[in-house]
Length: 437
Image (cartoon, rainbow, N blue to C red; front, side, top):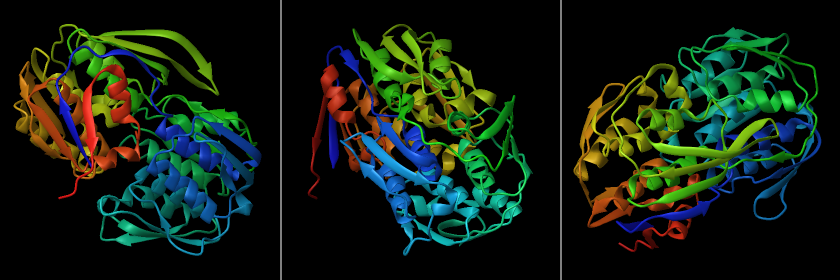
């Protein structure tokens, strides 16, 4: 599929972006090992999350769709998991693969994980290291353990582990393995990463304590099924909000958006650049804060972003780079080398994308430098199988002269299937068409 995007008049209105991707993965996984039936409302029905649901079914857990965005998961505890008859195909879902590796590591089974071409290039060594320290055997290709990956689970012992960089996926995999381990498991982070796993474990009755950057889980307390409402994904809503900031005369509201402080790094970065963002209707549901975010255009100035802020906006950094093309001065993004091992090398690809559209963007070893403001022009962009690259090109195309054509835009469905339709609801000139050549 390709997207054809042109600049347009003001974007106006409100949209509720789909359910949060990170929380949807975790809700399904934890419900699968809880005791009883959990009803998950607002589950993100993108390919990534559906792969996780399919993998849980293959592990013997009844996971039934009740309506388009509601799942009913009938868990019977960790002991009810069964060795799957074939490899778990996780598609493009790095989160699903990494979390499930942790889940099955403590069970007496051997599980093979595969993925698509993009996921098969993504390293799993950061997950394998702590799981091996706990007693699991993990195999993969090369030193970085790229998929296919095999986890031979069994008896685990709790560990104290300090990952070299903040990663919610590493932390979550270790905690999930810790549920089956003998003795307590502690993760000490270098900086605060997203904490959805800890919040959800606590809400379901786990014996877990959080002290600053240290999380300790004591196994033996069965998880209890609970109803869950998944808030709107701030990583998806961010694209709508960025469009509201950049397209002249716009007024965009993103309703029911997750406002977990471990996920609002982009909001803080945009506010530091002078962005006009307002928050209203703040409340809490199932332990997660949410509210409505409003964006309107205004003058922007460059910023210097790194350190502890990076883990809290790692998925939104490519979008920040698009916004930076319209800010006065040189924006520096550093300490973000992790972007090189996402669905694509997002540092290299974003520098190439922005340069192709007329921006002054330069690669750094661990980030980007973007000088602005710079007029953008339309270009032909290849998504590289990366949903966030495709969506970034779309937002840039809304403020570019001429037409921007994004090839391979079907990858957007891995996180935000209704992206183009939601933009059109706001008034964007964004047309999907089948690619036949």
